[in-house]
Image (cartoon, rainbow, N blue to C red):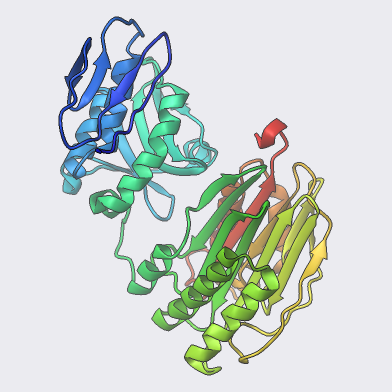
Length: 418
């Protein structure tokens, strides 16, 4: 029996079926174009055609096919862009990547993309195509043209993000400079930079984007809770990346087996010690958030920050041994009250607080607290970028001597977590 997957688009009586079997299936009262069967006898104001175009994007077999399918979807006057890894430029996605134009992503346009909302600038509309909270592509159209439906863009985001991993031209165009091997390893191990898990929105930043080596982050939804982590491998370069990726993999392995934060850290520490015999360590801070409270385990990491009613405070968390220092250490869970709506938690590596200006002055925890409070918003990706942007401005072109990581978790204020 062949596998048959159908997409049913139910609007104005439309029904579209996608036959995924390896052979043709003939049905009465239907026609087929590009493998999409559209039943006759309905009027749906182009909805069926748009869904057929969406299916063509999903089934593209190569980069050129993706570009053609997206052009068909948005029209000849639309231009497609990717956001570079540093989130400071828009790079045109076209059939000839060497001919791609690029534009600075700044001011109101940058803010709109971080918040996943359309923006009109000088009679031009820009709107993001996002995989949940993660901006993937940006489409530019004339402001007078009708915008695409929200439902269509919502469906397109995960497809586009999947193609970014599948067809490397979509990834290559995001790189405005060469990425180090250590950074390549690091990014390959990480989740999306932003997501929405139940009532909680998550945003993260890792800098310098093209040279990062040693810092890592993770998050997940499991067992009715949201889990988030910040890790910092000893040193810099490939060795630091290997250590942090090993620790992260051990944490995920324990979490997916059903273990809590303490056992996750126990197993990550044992894995590092078994591999490096105490010669390499990773600091880590993990948290678990649910309706009963917020749990933390601090393995020698920077403390967490909590936002309650708009007020930011640094949590007094006992710091235990970093992961991998000894072969057997029992980490302890520390519990704090649960988050109210609009509240959140922010995890940072030591990069921000230890950053220095060209004159040598320390950024420090007081300034970090002030920046979290000043930039706290409903969109954690914006909060993370604004805070780390301030750190980079403070360095003012100076060398980033340590990786800079931020993970921001925000409990949404709207009904149903919206």
